Length: 163
Image 1: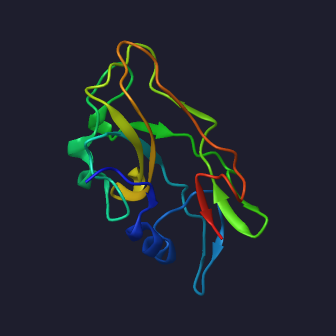
Image 2 (image 1 turned 45 degrees about the vertical axis):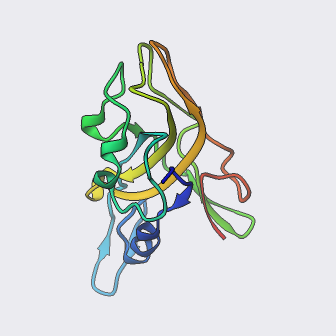
C-alpha cells in the first residue's frame, strides 16, 4: 500500500475530545478558567514504500517507514519540529485553517535512506498522536538540503482545512 494524503481519522475524533491545541487560548469551563499549553507538532518524512494514510493513528504506526537519520534530520525524535506560531490557526471564508511555517528544511548534509514522498505530521505533546499525511513527488537526496514549502494559509490551499 502506498502513502495517501489524508487528515487522519483518529485526529478527527481527537479534535472533538480536545487532545490537540494548535494556538494559545484561554478556555472557560464550567468549573474553572484554564489556559492550555500550545502543543508541539513534528513532521516525519516517510519512505515512498510506506503506508501512511487516514488509518494512521500515531507516529509509531509509521516510524518503521521513516527515512533514516542524516544531517539535521533525526528519526529518534520523530522528525523535525514544525513551527506552530500563534495566529496560524485562522478563519478564511467559512473555513477554519492551519498551515505551519512557510518552509521546512532538513539542513545541509541530508542524505535520504531511500526515496520518500510523504510528510507525516504528529502531535509530540500528546503521545505522538497522528494529525495528517501529505504526499508529494518522490524525492531522493544525497548530501543536500530538502525544503518543503507550505501552501498559503487560506480556505482553498491551507495544509489543514475544516469547512
